[in-house]
Amino acid sequence: MAGATRPERPISPHVQVWRWHVTMLTSILHRFTGVALYGAALGLALWLMAAAAGPEIFGPLAELLHTPLGQIALYLIVAAAAFHLANGIRHLVFDTGAGLTPTDAETSAWFAILFAIAAPAGLWALVTFGG
Amino acid sequence: MAGPKNTMRTSLGRVRNHGAAGEGTSHFIAQRASAIALVLLMPWFIVSVALSLKGGNYLGVIDFLTQPVNAVGVILLIATGFYHMHIGMQEVINDYIARPFTKVLLLVLNTFALLALGVGAVFAVLMVNFGV
Image 1 (cartoon, each protein chain N blue to C red):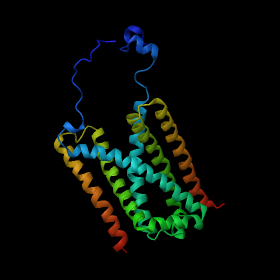
Image 2: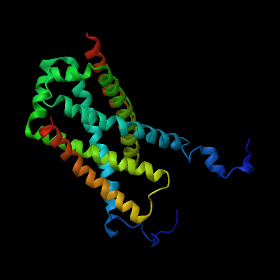
Image 3: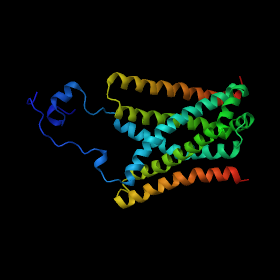
């Protein structure tokens, strides 16, 4: 096609050359939590089917969710859902053209992260200590 | 009708009929519309399941799913959620998988797995309510 030697073209800057921004983290986390929630939702479908199948199939699944590992998994799923929810609302606002200045976008990014930390803790407290 | 002189597409692009897939906008809108529904459905489900099941034993789950409002809510959550997941995962596959065979395989798997488990989950809610 072109010449025998590769022309010295500038290459596109890759991830590691950028100064870290919190908006980078929320962008990566949105996709990561989306994929994680995909797995969790498939688990929810299996959980519903197990409930329809009867106690002898549902029982072992419920026991698995009661083990420390199962409880940690549920806690992390709630955290992922809280983040994807808060950051998803953030993106719906972005779609209207609002909140896109660096200051606004960084403030809302921190809000989404704080919500993802606070929401599962709050729900856990409500379930454990609530009426 | 726009003649060749009135279009901004190149002749090669017209012949191959590639370029813009012509379906990006509907994907964009569908993803946002399902997202808006899920803003309500997803927190409702997590909070009400966490509060009303607590122990998560079999009879508690059956009690929860036989409340009409809960049954409708869970079916809506599964339908809307799986639709949203389908679009999202399709985007991820298109972004990261370059090999055509692997890409098509995963795209088909994405559709089949979600349809199978989604229909299975909805049927499970109906079965709990209307018996075998």
